[in-house]
Image (cartoon, rainbow, N blue to C red):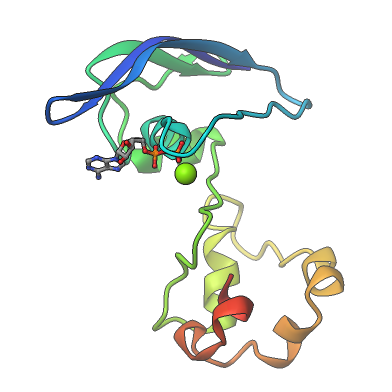
Length: 138
Ligand SMILES: Nc1ncnc2c1ncn2[C@@H]1O[C@H](COP(=O)(O)OP(=O)(O)O)[C@@H](O)[C@H]1O
Ligand SMILES: [Mg+2]
């Protein structure tokens, strides 16, 4: 369970997240909807520790992560799929995919369903991520 309680976040003087509270149970899909600029991406960045919150708390599976650095949140089991092309342009396609397994035991293989969904990746494993087309990067 992800628990967020009365989260407040600011960009300088702009108060973006105002007393945001919700719970997201494991095994269910929780969807966040809102018009452009309302703070959806900001909330995800706060959950990952990429942007600091001023007040409020975040816990995941009973562990308080409010002040934890990003790598601890990832180790606790939180992942983030950014909306843009935020891959590692100088790493190969294979290395980019392996980054997603960084918190799994060594030797964990890339799930075959990734290549079933995106067959082109299999032919491009050795290519630098930044050399793929924009759509392929996405
Ligand atoms: N790095 C930033 N510095 C200052 N203001 C920002 C920054 N990122 C986003 N904002 C502002 O915060 C508000 C929320 O943005 P964002 O979380 O990206 O919205 P959404 O993802 O819901 O479209 C917007 O008004 C946006 O202009
Ligand atoms: Mg957004």
